[in-house]
Amino acid sequence: MISSFFSKTKPINYLVLLIILVLFYVANYFILKINFDSVVFLLLILIAISLQVIGVQETVRTRKTTNTTSFAMLFFVLLCMAVPKTLQYKEIVFCNLFLMLSLNRLLALKSLKQVKQKIFDATLWICVASVFDPWVLLFLVVVFLAVYIYGTKEFKNWLVPIIAIVFFVLLISAFLVLTKNINFLENHYVIDVDTNLLESFMANFSIKPFLYIIVILMVASFVLVKQGYQGVGRIIHLRLLLVYFLVAIVVFSVQNLENKNYTILLYSFFPAAIFATNFLETFKKKRLKEAVLLVCIFFPFTLLLIDLVKK
Image (cartoon, rainbow, N blue to C red; front, top):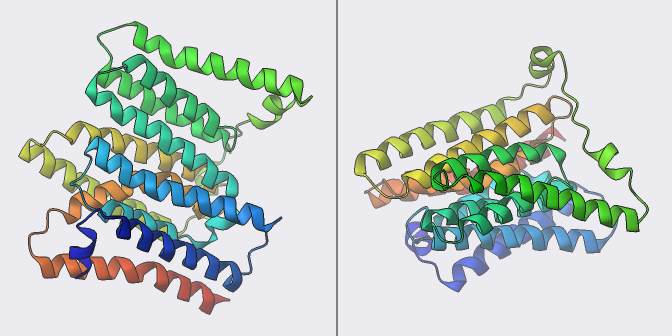
């Protein structure tokens, strides 16, 4: 029943998932007693997350990273629900929205049309995202990898990301001068790396994100081997998504050394949802697919129950 419902991409699928996600977060707002500056911020965060859910499905539909179903959207929603304290970190939510816009433009390079414009847009969106979290500049690695895959034949394509970065710096500098906040760049774009990385990692090690990373990497490896064996055209997209996922984990790991903030894993949820969907699509037996979906659906509620018991 569940697999049949989400195997379609009708408006009701969007509506059901968005309602579930919003109700879940609103319930957590009261259960976890999350503090907000105003209700406006709460609404903006919910809108940003809702746009990301819709963006997942639109990317799947236009970039053909999975079959045309709602499973990717479902997995993305479930992953978001697994981190209920997302509402406390509006910067990460807004940052991920721009990162997803960037990734969408990179996946669009496969058509080999307007390559320079898409590279420029992708780079610019990452720069905009860095206003909320400077560490996401590491995602520029994914941009240059995409240039290597899709635009390596023309040397000018390698210069486009640099031009986009310069353009962003000039644009934000002009804005900061007008607002008399020129020190923002100097204060914000400061990336400190702990010299005792191993000690900090062991002190802040947690089993939940570790298991999540291991499971997704196992699923991704299986999917890549399966897709490569079948010779399906989306294999290049999946390789790019794997690198994106790995960069997201690096960003999470480095920042998690200072503070156990699992919300940063939000950066990795889109590629994780895509790999989970491709993995689910390999199941031929409907009962097995239903069982996997039921386990995934109950998982975030189980985590919430555990958090409540700890309190």
